[in-house]
Image 1 (tube, rainbow, N blue to C red):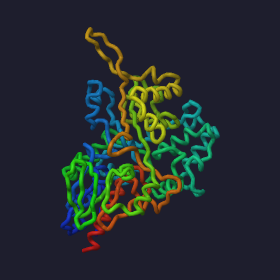
Image 2: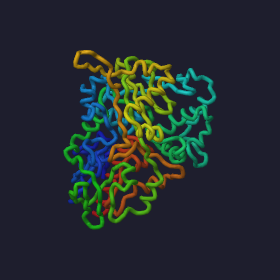
Image 3: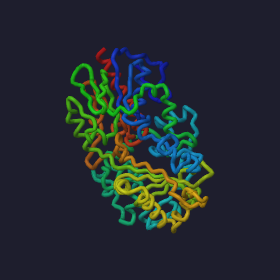
Image 4: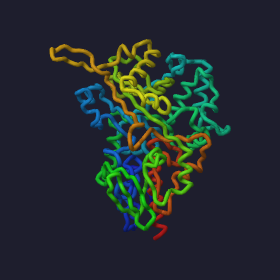
Length: 476
């Protein structure tokens, strides 16, 4: 049996033999993991159907252009409101590894890309001052954080949190949290360093940070899996899976029943941990215990348009905020309109923003920016123009798009991370198949080192598809 190892090879005429199987495989979730697993199984001649709880395909790969919720933003077309000729991502903002599983798929399909480090210069905030790494020069706290972040894959000390392992001064804590806490889905005091270090060390790609130059990531995912999209049934939130008999019975929230012989569950870790899907029999202790070893925190994305770029035309990422630990100069290398900042918040900063009103959220972000950039954020933030009945113009709401992933009913947060004390065995147990019937995929279950990323989601889908095929061929 020849298994396709790259997305580009997963087509019906794959040279590997088809797998004789009279049954059907159900896949729960139409994100990257579910779509890839379905693509592989379909290429092997296996009947597949996909149940997606939400109203669109892609999971946490979500692009602004594709969202109907924003189409009438302030009574105008979304893209025109933002004035941007580059894609704005609300979910996965960049991918890592030009030679990663996603990177190779992008390359093989001829999609134009930009490596962020080649077009943008990162900046770092300490003491409300923002500088490049060169400008920070010999600052001991800055050097301490960068040395820790750069050597994180090689960590060999005791198991503890990132914050405890780093041991940096209070002055540098926000920068540490931005680069090694928020970036990995939470806060530096919550993430366990041993498994994270092991995951980073296990990655088999170059780790370059890359964005698509003109194509939204969600569009590429939909295009790549165009043969699978007809198999997806939207707004079918699964509430129970009964695998006690020879035939698996699946129920959704509307009481509809579906039957399959095998099922791949790709829903986010937060859904599994909250009991969003009940299993009969209940999941084995190995699986449920492993779930408790991983976290999935609140996650928040804000995109704000400005009249002027005051943060630097060559800026890439900006690290070190508190209300917003991570900014991206979204248009760098992609547009002549360098006026859009994208903010990513995970963990406590996202939880704080999630509890606020929209105006309060934007005010918190702009206030922090004003402190760093001497009031320029409030001065240059772009607002809509409102015309009253007498033809008089005035400024209306701030032009911004907000995506609170915490409030997405079927996602409930960002992406997974290991808690202190979590081991590689826990990761394996999280993804462990049950009785040759129930299989697990999704970024949290990735065992290749890319958990928490789109590469991890794809790799987990490939692994789960392989496990399904092996369960069929072993019986045969």
